[in-house]
Image (tube, rainbow, N blue to C red; front, side, top):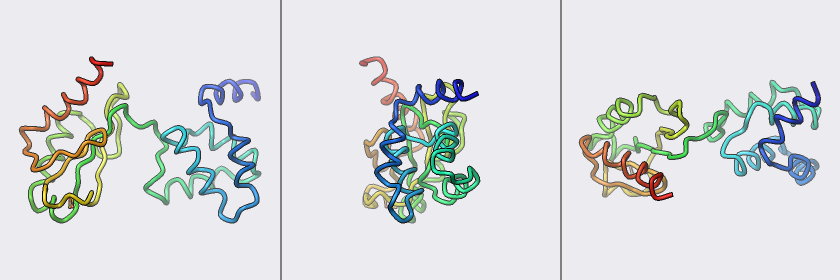
Amino acid sequence: MEKTQGKRLAQYNVDLQAIVDKWKDKEGNLIMILHDVQDKLGYVPRDISLELSRMLGVPLARFYEVLTFYNYFKMIPPGKHNISVCLGTACYLKGAPALLAELERVLKIKPGQTTLDGMFHLDLVRCVGCCGLAPVVVADGKVYGKVQPAQIGGIVNDCLKKEKVA
Ligand code: FES
């Protein structure tokens, strides 16, 4: 059992002991530890929560309380390419819901989900500070402004083009 868990942890390449040592005497350390894990891995895998629960002597349920309370934390791997639709007021009024519907149709996933091949993750954001460009879509950190639903396919293709270059 121990061996199997050790093998599963090895795939993550994260030094949990160093993270625990860094935060163990600080107040509110659980959330900081989970932040560090997510910074390194992009999400908090169940195996990591299990191991941290063992190391810290904190029930696994407490980890899940924190992970589900804060939207920031992800428990599934993020997609290789992350696409976010801004649903802040300006974007919403200028047609963001239609962009979201088109992305859901093209990628066949809902916000918060990752495509089965792990290629795309779809998210919602609330104002990225470019309201003058509303409605806005952010794909792999690039801001697309005044987006029309017909341009969604092109944005997805821009992400895929990076695959071919790589
Ligand atoms: S509301 Fe979308 S960028 Fe501000």
